[in-house]
Image 1 (tube, rainbow, N blue to C red):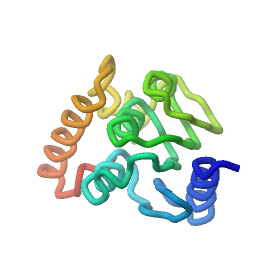
Image 2: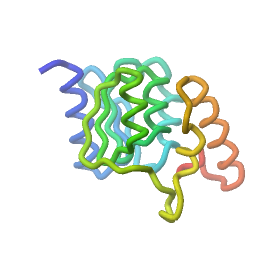
Image 3: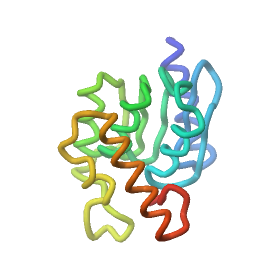
Image 4: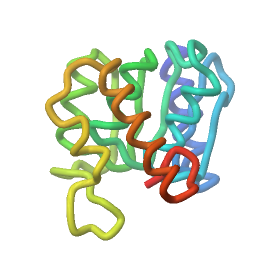
Length: 154
């Protein structure tokens, strides 16, 4: 089994065993984990780890276009999602990121399940991960200023 596959399995197991929202593994070790829902946790990982994310493996409960763009921006090599959106798949495929998932949905919804997640709306149609990251980070920071929640976790 390739190291990338082992890392993805390690991240997936930790995600499920500890009921986490996001786990990132690299070279056989967990380098980041959080229970924080939404893209806020991934934005924190980028702030903390920066280039260490390159070639890492990510296990995330929910992967839509926003999370997939952050994976592409970070240089992640593989992703496991409990739930993934069609747009999330498109972004991962467009950026040659290997992925596995349990459930596919048309869209990632907001917490009230009444509309599409605002982070998803923000990056719809984007193809440049760097631009998407900049937009997502600014939006999360503006939400956190209003709510006091670091990175505006969804």
